[in-house]
Amino acid sequence: MGIMSGLTGIKQIFFGSLTTNNNTEPKKELNNYSFLNHPIHDTISFQKSSRNYTETQINIMHTLKALAVKLRLPDFYTGKPFDKGYKPTIEHVIPHSQKEKVAEKGLKNINSLENFVLTGSRINNKRDSMSLKEWYKRHPDYLENGKKALKKYEKINNPIINGKEWVEKLKKILNGELGYIAFTGRKNQNNLKDQKLSYVA
Image (cartoon, rainbow, N blue to C red; front, side):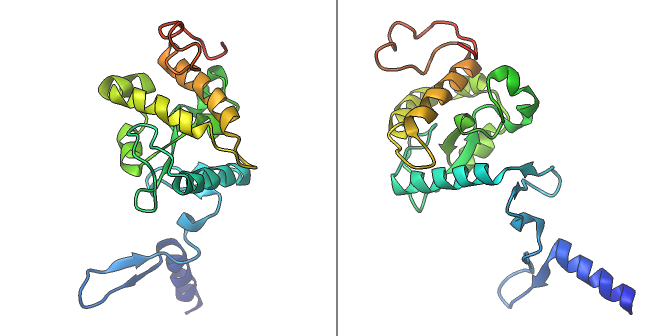
C-alpha cells in the first residue's frame, strides 16, 4: 500500500492530473510541481533539454516583453506593433543552439541582452536555428523592418534596460552575423552599407 501511494505521488508530480467534461476531450492540467512551472527553466518540450536562465536574465526578458506591449514596440522582423493581442517573444539573434560559440562571436552569454530582439511566437518558431544571413535571404523585407525597429528600441529608458546601450551592442552582433555592416547609425549608413565587418570591430 505504501509503495503504490508513493508511485501515485510521483505520477502526479510528473504528469499532472487529467480532467474531463461533457464537451471536451480529456485534457492535462499541470500542477504546481510541474517542471514547466520552474522559475528558472524555459522547457521547450519534453523531448528537448531545458534552457537555463539566471534570475537576472529572466528579469530582463520579462521587462523587455512588458515594455514591448506597453510602448507598442514593433516586431523586429515584421514591423507589427505589439499589444495585448499580439504578444512578443524573446528571439536570439545568434541561435541558442550555437551557445558554445558565443565567445568567438563577441558575447559573454547566449542569453545576453545584446543577443535579444522581439518577435511574435510564430515567426520565432519559423526561424528556429536558421542563420540570420539565410533568414534575411528568404525574407529580405525583414531587414528594413529591423532597422526601423531599432530606432524605436533605442528610445527605451528603463532602470533595467538602457535602449541606446542595448541597440549599440545589438548592432555589432547583427552585423557580425551578416558579415557586413547592415545596421548602422544614421550618419554612417550611406558610407558603410557594404563594408565587411568582424564581431570585434
